[in-house]
Length: 168
Image (cartoon, rainbow, N blue to C red; front, side):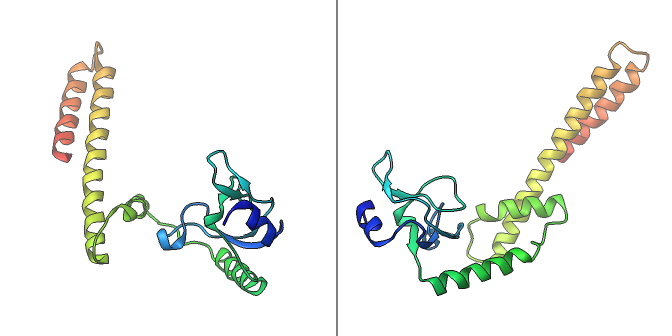
């Protein structure tokens, strides 16, 4: 639908579902239950677009679905109920990283995805430990250079570097 046709059918304030990222059939993303706040127009790239309440950027008309008032109202209620429930936050750094990695693990089953996510977490943990031990060793070596404790610091730095190798 072009901008002129959209404007003819739908005035400013039309109730819509808008998808600023991708449409649901193209992958999970954000759905805004909102209304138009401008007339449709052509973007610099020539795409027909419209601005909606709650979004700072324009949205292509292919990502805007006008909806009936009852459908819109029902979606708003569902949205407010969902917003009222506090999200369950991950409790540990490992759980937070796992939630970030989850989307990047293509697999046929949840069990395979969990196994791959755990494997990635183990690899990441090893790299972080190795980097931490190496940084600590460098710090101790710098601290001890030229000091009375130079020999002790050199021994500690050597042990930290050994642990860095073991971690990786």
